Image (cartoon, rainbow, N blue to C red; front, side):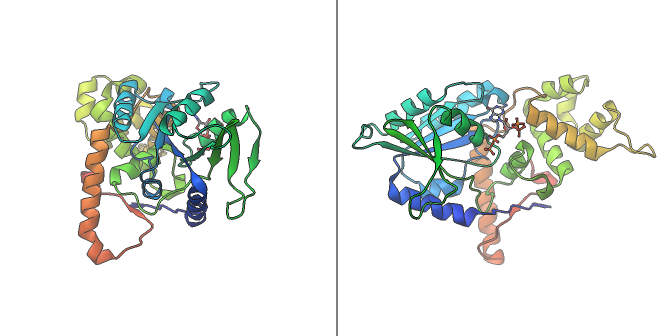
Length: 316
Ligand code: G4P
């Protein structure tokens, strides 16, 4: 099975971004999902903005595991010309922290002669509109009207000498790590018709079993978290279906409904504060994905706009 990864307006957005970068950008802000910081980072953006000062905003930190958020912040803050901060929608006035971080990344910019120009990007559903609306409340937002710049771009004056350019969410052609595909689908970043919910729920359960078995036991009123961790994910999904009384006519368990329950519980935070990947795990999965891609490349040829998702045995 493969995730149907349709990059949609990727080409148009990419061109708009290239134009904006050409016109001069001092700091690139990338909004990441704090529950899946690695999977939600756009490799295409990294390639387009290589060497530019970067600010990583780990958004929705209220839903993420604080200990793992700390690991990710440490990981990003150790990179050259990169800063990272945690964020969520409960912060009423995030502009001050954002401006301060951008100024620190581009200390030679600022003032009326050399205003600080900031580009903000992020995958769908990461909370960009919510953040932009909060930021724009301070100052009026307007649609971009410069030549060569898409009308979809919003320009926001964060301060008298700090301008924020907002581009539409941009996806990328291929998900390098299969595990990242599962994490993106689990988070709701990918449209629900693009993947098999039971398969994604099973992959999610495996991650939860590895690090958050107690959260599963508590949410679904199942005894023995240690025993749950050792179960096959299929058996665990069946247990959840039985516990919730999700039975079809004829007495068969409704595993589809159980999968939807698990996915919704993760997305809403009902399972608790969870982060699906540590920096070390993400880097390992990307390395595996790239090695597999390199092996397949001569046979398949370039330019496939779909992400292969592994057989169940490859998931862990
Ligand atoms: P996008 O522009 O990047 O696509 O994302 P958007 O702001 O529309 O946010 C996507 C969903 O995430 C929304 O929920 C929004 O309320 C929620 N959200 C945004 N920021 C945060 C945050 O920091 N923490 C949490 N917990 N949720 C956040 P929704 O259910 O899709 O819509 P709504 O009914 O809440 O508006």
